[in-house]
Every structure is written in structure tokens, then in C-alpha cells.
Length: 395
Image: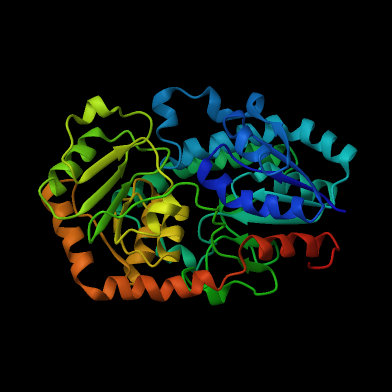
């Protein structure tokens, strides 16, 4: 029996893909400790892992509301939060790992404290990458506007000051790329397929396991009431988008389509007003169940959502909110499995959905990608990769 420790950032999108992996490891009789945050305790403990809270050390929890909204968009702020959290966790995590003596540490690619303590203590390490694997080649998919490029250039002196704080505390970090970039000699789990991963041939087959999405079982029955079903969701974080939801209702109120709109818990039914018979709006829905029936997914382009959509061969209409999501949308465009929404208007949305529904190439390209995703080894393959480093045999 192996002892395995997971570290993750306080984000559902980074946590959810790991849950099936943890559940698989526990099922095989291994012990798992999972360092995370109280809002995620329940879903982590449901896997059988031992939950360890990190809330007292998280730099993001001390941000002002307007700063929190910039996480993921502002490189300087995001780097500062990562460095603050890494340094706050340094002593307590090192002491805990010296006492526990785990066989392997698995850390989200953004939870740099996990990789740092593994390096310090010589513990086998696996990076859990819930976005695309990122190197100088795959970075080409993250196309930036001129304004974004200039903003990054102006922010670099401040970013480098944060990197210097890590260096002064004994961390072997040369630049922000050491935090963001996947290297060629770190064992890495990537929750997508090689077909969807940009420049997949530049990532070593020895070190990289492209395991595909970790799908949970369907928990809700969805009934398809019309020939075509449109599913709309802007994810679990940046979803306070009442004006856009009203445009969605206006776009499809008189259509022949069934529409399921997932609004998040910051919008109430009263905010939306009376809904036409063909549109259902709910705070949350069983996304896997809906995607099994959907014909088009209007999405913010979070990596998990796109992987799940393509797994079921559902093409997308995309409205990304962050640079990471823009990179995912760009890859979908390159592979012809969706279209980007040019503006947030009812007319633009209706036109984009009509195009994706009625041009067969979108569904065909999505179905082609579904084949690659379904051939991935999933949670079992990810567990095999981790146990390989623990010196355990595959099941």
C-alpha cells in the first residue's frame, strides 16, 4: 500500500479532474491525503481521501473582491498570490511530509508549493495539469491581443520581484515560466487527449500521460423534449452575467429549440423574469447528463467543460472569459469543432448557434475528437502513472 499526497489550488476546475483519480487510488487500497480548501472538503472526502485544509495560508482569501475577480487575468496579481501561498505553506508542509514520508506527491501545476516540497525532500513527484500542457511550442495556441502583450511586458518587473522572493527562500525558480511551464523531465498527467493537446509531439511519451477527462457517473435524468437541445453555461466562477443570460433568452425565446441555461447561484429566477416554455433556467445542472443529449454547447471554454463537450461529440459556441479559456477556444477553432461568439448580443448568439447546428462539419469534427478522448485511459491510467512512481505494479 502506497501513501500519496495531493495538493491543489482552491478551484473546482482544477480539483474536479483529480477526484476520479483519487477515488481509483483509494479503491485499489492506497492511502491519499489531499491538501485543499474548505469549500472543496465535501467532494474531496467523498473520494475516501483524508482532507487537510490550507485556508489559513491561502493568499487569495485575503484579497479584496475586485482583486479576486482579476485572478487568472492579471499575471502580476496571480503570481503574487502563488508566491504568498507557497511561502506561507513552506514550513508546515515540509514538517508534515517529513513525518508522513509519502511515496509520491501529486500537485496541480499551479500549486507550486507541492512541487517545491517534493524537490526539497526528494519525494517522487507528478504534476497534475488540468489545462493544456504548456511549453514554448504549445504556447502558440495562446494567441494574445496587442493590449494583452503590452500588459504582460509592463507587468514583468513586478512579476520578477515575486520570483525573487521565492529565490531568496531557497526555491530553484529562474522565471515565471518555471511556475507556468511544464518541463520535459517531470512526470505529468494531462486530462485531455493527445489529439486535442496542441503540439502533442513535443511532449515526451515517457513523462506525459494524456489520460482524458475524468467523467463522473450521471446523477440526474435529462429529458430531451425537442429535436435540438442547446445547453448554455458560463462555468462556476465568472458566471455573474445577468445581461448575457437575458440575451440568451431573447435569442431563443421564439425558436424551435429546447434550451437549458445554467446560471450559477448568483442569479435568481426573479432576475430573469418569466421564461418561455422552451427555456429552462437553473442555478446548476448535471452537465454530463445534459451533454449526452445536447446538440450545441454555449460555453465559457473552461478546459473541463470543453473536454466533456467533445467527449460526447458536442460542438461549441464559445465566449471565453480568461486568457486560459481563450487558448482553449483557439484550439477548438483550429480543429473546426466550434465557433467563437463575436459579441454578446441575442442576434450574434442566434446566428452562431444556427451556423454550428446546420453546418455538419462542426459535429463531424467534434465526433472525431470524441474518438480520441474516449480512447484515453482516464482515471485508471492516471492512477497507473502515479503508482509507477511509487514502485507499485499496475492493476
